[in-house]
Image 1 (cartoon, one colour):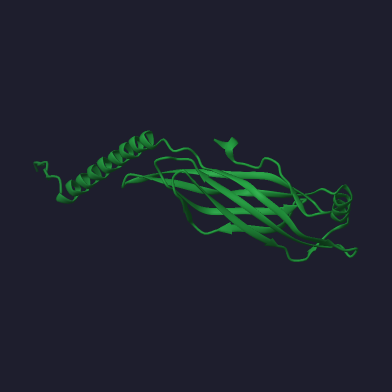
Image 2 (cartoon, rainbow, N blue to C red):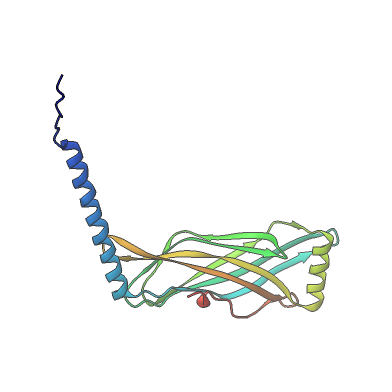
Amino acid sequence: MPRYASRHGTSPFIWCAAIICAIISIVVIFGGIVVFVGYMVIHPRVPIISVADAHLDFLKYDIVGVLQTQLTIVIRVENDNAKAHALFDDTEFKLSYEGKLIAILRAPEFEVVKEKSMYLPYLVQSYPIPLNPSLMQAVDYAVKQDVITFELKGGTKTRWRVGPLGSVKFECNLSCELKFRPSDHTYIASPCSSSHKH
């Protein structure tokens, strides 16, 4: 018996899917152009986070091997951009001593307007921290030398809105040592900034 080839037209569903994909592609391309142009116009600079000030409010350790401390740490956030406000989230810093975690410092989402700075004050009060013999020796040595060092590491994520379709995102990271004099609880100021990251 003869065979006949059947011909079927393209279904409306496939046409609709193709049109939708084409529209999505155009929107994505257009959005990328808008973000790129906006970035070139605004040309945002990465904000700078730094330790503005600190103070050793309280430090106590005993022969049993328990350390208790309280610190005040002030983080400064600078937005040097003249044309855009900056939004910050996922802000978190970890404070430790000789690798032993003391506290986690967090901040809710916040905004810094263009060409302005904001200060984040933290009051860090630790629970009693048990020390092993090596840590007890480290604390004892620090007190005798009148210099005790804590480590502060962390950062924040920042973004600027560029038009209605997108945003530019950056990360600011901080990693530094905070040094104090146990005798009078003063902060030995030293450069502690994320400015070298950009």
